[in-house]
Image 1 (spheres, one colour):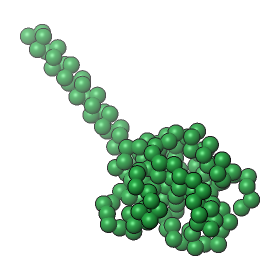
Image 2 (cartoon, rainbow, N blue to C red; image 1 turned 90 degrees about the vertical axis):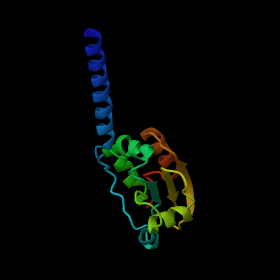
Image 3 (tube, rainbow, N blue to C red; image 1 turned 30 degrees about the horizontal axis):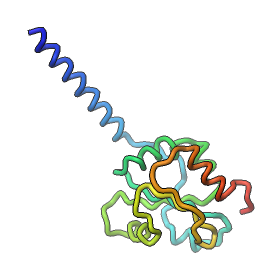
Amino acid sequence: MNLARTKWLAYGTLLAAVLALAAMQSWPVEDLVPWRTDLAAELDAPDDRPTLIYVGADWCPPCRAMQRHVFGHAATADAIVAAATPVKLDLTDPPPGPAHDLARSLGAYALPTLILLDPQGRELGRLTGGRDRDELLDWLETLAPADAPG
């Protein structure tokens, strides 16, 4: 009887841990970057700043990790806004759709993808896959220094 009770206690503990982990992964994550959503309007607007395009989806684990550990930090959000106009292409909904068409036209076939465009719409650089804060900020600072004119 004692062995059976111990097994059930172990299974119950394991189940509780798995459920807690699943619940944490499904909690909404606050993204502090003020993403714009109309890429065409941003590219047509008279602006001398680069545009940072983030292609992601809610169902994408690396996207969620970046949302939590990169875009969820005020200092990172401030650095992104200082360097570029942030635009998000949300691919959460299944294709077809305008965001999917834009992502395809940009060659963004993996999630997440970050693309930095100059004010004329030419690609300055691209990151594919999940990145940490330092990696993203170093890449952004190299391609679009925050103290650059604009």
